[in-house]
Image (cartoon, rainbow, N blue to C red; front, side, top):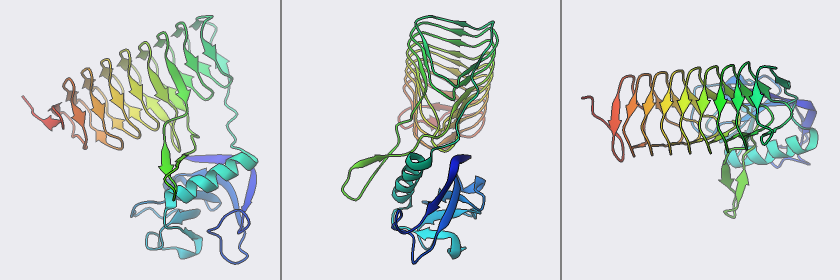
Length: 282
């Protein structure tokens, strides 16, 4: 995704150690590599076929267009430093629309930040927190004690081992007819959005981390941990106490058994059980 700055920012050797000579780079947005434009700043930490259009922080051997590369030994760390500097100086254009439909019912004991959208006939129970940028569709139920749209838990260690926080620029977008149980946490995305598809049902005490995406018609039982950047397809059933490792993709129509640890990509229609989870189509 691409996140526009409130005003352009000049990156030069006075504020970025990666800049050589007297170069000045005009930055107007922060983005992922595949969504960049000529004035975007992104980073690449692994070998990829994507050729970013903008300025990219990367190791020397990773990108073919050397004229737009800021060479780094640790691209993710340097991106965090530069992005956090830019955000602190000029800010991100994240003035989200605030709209609560008249038919929505919201407990007086819940806290709704500015820049939240809540659809028709949705119910927000007591002690729910909806942070700025959260979008909830029609006919949804958010049960008591749930927090949606707070910053995700993403850190990268610097040269001294100190954890540095990755910027959280994304949103949480929830479809129609979704139910989210009590005492759940749904973190907003970092450089993309956290998504929950139409008709999905999530039980109590679950955690959905930043950038994760859950498809349509999912059933997710209690005490499930979905770590960062997990993609779960449509019509999946996840039994209690399952953990999904960050960054994996789970196909459509998948069944995951109780207390499984899913640590690799899963094809459509699979049935998984165990630690680590293995496919056992019965």
